[in-house]
Length: 193
Image (cartoon, rainbow, N blue to C red; front, top):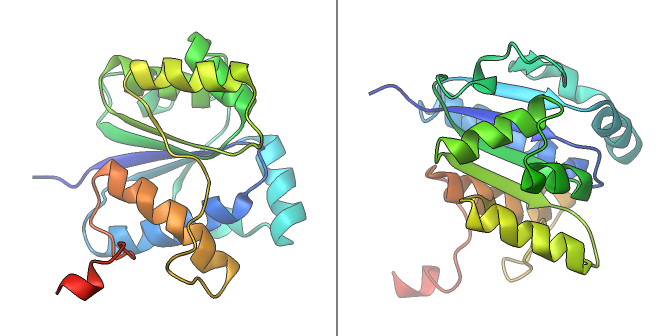
């Protein structure tokens, strides 16, 4: 059986560290044979935020299949594609709103719509605080449609020692939700061995 293919979308929300850590972990999963293709879509705002928050343009260096935000010829813009999962990391509230409303005005929202209509895994790492009622209702709509809301809210009980380790507490959870076998801290499981 062929390993699954995944779509990663990076929006202009703050939290580029999540996309960076996700990219690094995807490369390891691909090396382990858990992944086939990795498609990457990034908005212009996401590139600006990445450069501001991380001080580089390293997203250009990843050996992924890159697609522009308006490339509706991308294979995963159709339900006939072999892409089984999509993670939006980080997911802006604007992107969440368009997905929840079924507005497919770019490749990110079209691919998310495809994931929902085909009953495939769509994981949105929403990044905002606080949430207003509209955000909460849109998260409910996406959840009822089959998507998974995985807030970019890190955990601290693993005692992370760097920003990357802190971001990994969310990224590992998202990858686990997508069905990948990842090594991650799990509450009190070490003590139960």
